[in-house]
Length: 437
Image (cartoon, rainbow, N blue to C red):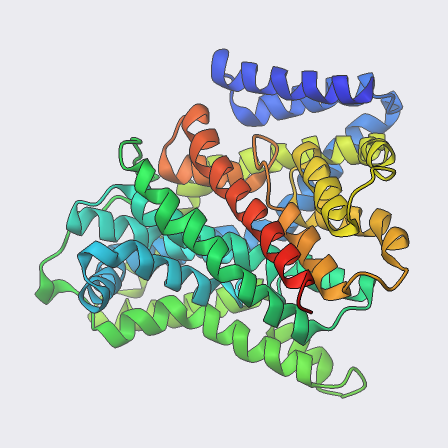
């Protein structure tokens, strides 16, 4: 019965947003409340759970998304994004720009949390499409596919990092195996799949549209690349330092602070104000005006993400994830496939890749304790499953939809399919590796 309620809730959500044109935030709150009551959540708990869901997801993403939007708008207005796109095209050639963006997405995505990488890469995508007349999704999907692979499979992202200790896996081996699997997943879900999306109409979020500037108006290539990639470099260095330092070291707390994504983004905004603002003759007030405008650009996106947090919190509070797992845990399949399958179902219901992965791990770990399964591959199987079937209850779905100006139907056949390709290819890679490691 609970599965039918969840299915009906998702159907109602789609109907309200796509059919009735209700704002997604309002639709999420209404459907979440009704679904929670139908699933047996005590009425007096419903308001608190909604607030916890909204606050929980915004608490994790607010600074990152707002600061990233500020950096993205400055990168666009200063011409830095256009300069980076020019360098990429000159380096790889226009016919291979999709491959260049996939490589950029992977390099940037390894140390960056997904939200940071998304808002950092998207302005570069639209700068390339504006300058060279390329379809936005043909350029954007390869970069975002690479970011998704890093988010689901590669430490130090929170999902795979949190799974490592649950299975007694090795962080270094998990990263190594993850990189092996990452290549085919990015290629198939990125440049190859993107070839079929040229006809899909997409437009940039307000504030990211840009007319190409003359070459003499652009900042230097070094300053542009340095500023855009500074968050990645800072997080890579600080994360490495945090992982290398023993927990008992007096410097460990400071390394953890320095590796915080929010702090890195704020530091990057300060540097960007100098490199792309003051050093190019822009007054400080003009730079702050650019940052202020960026807040309005992402306000609606933040509301939608907040609503998705309420929806996920309701489903977790009702215990639907455990009901689903109880139905699947006795299936006669490989533990790796079972772990992937359980994660996929929870992901489809809950939305959050990290929550789906960690929830599945808690339920699957007892089944994988016999020593017959490589723990590093178990981490990657769950990580791959956590990316599948992203739809209207996932914050990433709405980020992609809003930033690229897509309809829900187009988002389902582009973003959702891309994420599911990554998940399926990831599982295939895990099964192949299980034969040799």
